[in-house]
Length: 403
Image (cartoon, rainbow, N blue to C red; front, side):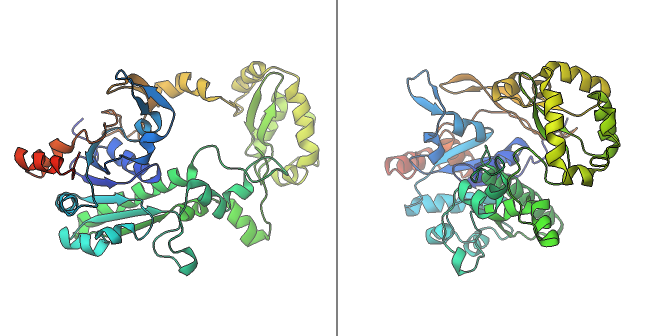
């Protein structure tokens, strides 16, 4: 295998916490050189738990470690003019700049897209924010966190148990979806630049991202006039397609078409349900779900989950246990796919984190290095990339421009 997919691409990472760092983690996993620019206090997420006890007695953020592997850290005080000048030099040798400050922050620092293009004419500049940079007056300057995006996009209104209160999705999908979409947009912009020589501005909104993935929830309203509500684990238009409680644990059983319905009915020894006029087709099963689900729940409850797994495996019925995280981390399929990997984190030792899902045959994504210590690569970047002299670096440190 020769090189990495994004080898030769340099990304200047001005991001913090989650949406931006998730985007740059994807690019780093695929081989880009990612230089993370941190303020003297470090990325806010260095203070987020869970924490690992270091050999030096300090605590290190597992949150930060998990999404900042494969990156370099340089610590610059951008409030100082000499710090801004270092950033200008870094922009001049970078392909991509990614930031996720509140809209207007970069402009106040003097690093608008227009100013960056004066430094590097073909720069690709990606901003990630809650509502976006190009918004009407009511959206301008609004701060946002993942939960704000989940609520504003409508996602929380369709999540949770039937009749229950609004429910946040159990992972920060607003941040994570935005991070993925930013990475996709950057890759598209890199390919466009390859063909035309033209860089561009990318404006990614967390709210946009979640509206984008609402799939049939939007269609059910615009085409059928229905305002979707939470359905627990059930699917709004496919039945049965939800979790059922076995004697000892929960099982997800998604029956996605009528032929699978027939196989399922035979597997649970209820062939009479196949041609029952209430349940013969998926639209009928969905229409009459209040009658069907209790029947199926009583059947599934009569056996232990392991018994059902054996039956479903034999009959080719899709299913899954509702795994807790401890089971996921030890699962043989997950581990075979290298989705749990071990890294040797400085001052902490060996810890397990999530691997890369990008399984390309020639240039797969992978975890190559641990997350950086704060300012770990400051001297390396200044001396080797920007060609500062050792005396200049020492002077910058004494002035607390860098750390």
